[in-house]
Length: 297
Image (tube, rainbow, N blue to C red; front, side, top):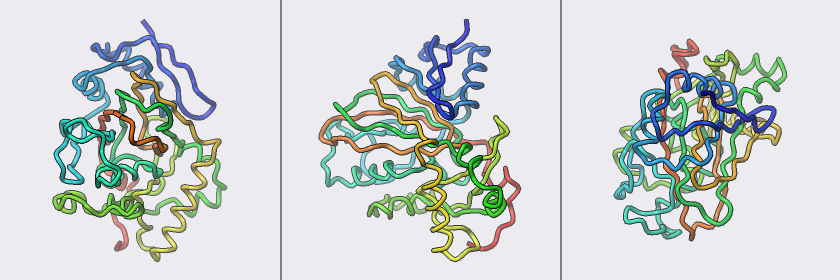
């Protein structure tokens, strides 16, 4: 038995058919999935109405799972290893627009890569669509390998070896959110990440950017922020982007090491429920790129 991999464009994304991920995946079949993942960076598995336990089991094939902090301090609706990408409270009611959790979630509409604000960031994320609004709420993905390839050679030389400070507080400050659970400040201090990294599975080079990126370490803050914004704008041009329009039952996996993504607006008076599992990378980007010694932040 072999899967069918259908590319969704010349650069990024593919649809995978011929597998039921709610059941144990044979080793040989997972090798095919992993090869498609390493090539296409975003995989769409349609018609996969998985439970949380089934999603967790499939996710563990890619590596160790992250546990999600309680950012806003309110009662959590889901278990800690399943991120609640929804507009519901712990009792299943739609959040009021003024609820701090709704404001926090608006940060997902900024271009970002999951967990770049952790010393060991995310390898990949898997998002399962459980309930959807009548329109809107798409997710866009940008291929950072293709963006790197398109940069002029002189620009590439300027960027190699740079490190950037990342923080969840940087991205949420941009949308006016400050109501963090006090424990989060201790759990998630700012961390440095490489600006340019090798994507080990494909051997290609990738930019590593996000709304969590604050400034270039060792540069004047505003000069570094200008560079980050310039590169994000460059990397999210239409030719580098795939937009996914969700259907209930979709399971989407993306490679956080070489993509950025963002959610699009929707009518938040309607229920939108997606469950995300996140797989941690093997080590920090600084260790991967040999940038252990850095100037002061």
